[in-house]
Amino acid sequence: MRNEEIPNPAVYRLSFYLRQLESFHRGDRHTISSKQLGEALGYSDAQVRKDLAYFGQFGHPGIGYRVDELIHQLKKILGTDKISHVLLVGAGNLGRALLAYKGFVHKGFKIVAIFDADATKVGRKIGDLLVRSDQDIASVVAELQIRVAMLAVPVQAAQAVADQLLAVGIKGILNFAPIALNVPGDVVVQSVDLALQLEQLSFRMTLGDSSPGDESSL
Image (tube, rainbow, N blue to C red):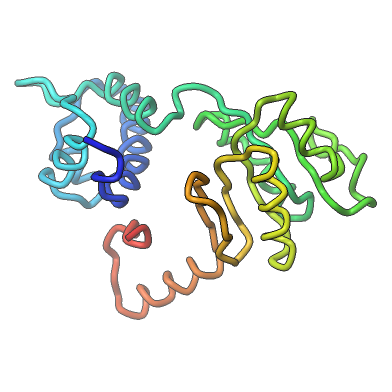
């Protein structure tokens, strides 16, 4: 099946399946059924089977899914079965928090460089990394063959920084600025708007809705 035929919500739910499977694995669970996986996340067994069927056949008759095997397959599908180098633009409060988060490496991503346009921040060390000038982005991207960037800059600077990243070959941007970036069709942007998520949370609380919250991907 071609990628364009796979619904975005199904791809989004893969991350939830993977997270739950990793939890089962830590609990020394070796096999799981679609019903058990679905119940743990609030989905039907039919939904689980349908989502996984877009990517292949992973179940075993009389067994269900082998947890470690399905974890490996989902990581391969999501492209997180190997470590990808990531650069971070923005050494402010959010940037420092992202750099301090240790969970990225466990998911296959390692921040290997951090940049900022503020000369007062350049040269300072955050964790193991030295803040570099945004003028060094091109050389570092070429040297480390980076294709993914995190954008943690003020909204007024976001598009200009995105253009700078595109010019040096970045193909994927995780954007924390509350603005829709204008990028070519061959570049993937995933936006994280924390204020928007809080608005949606408030709305769902008002309705008394406790259903799984992945519908924001629709």
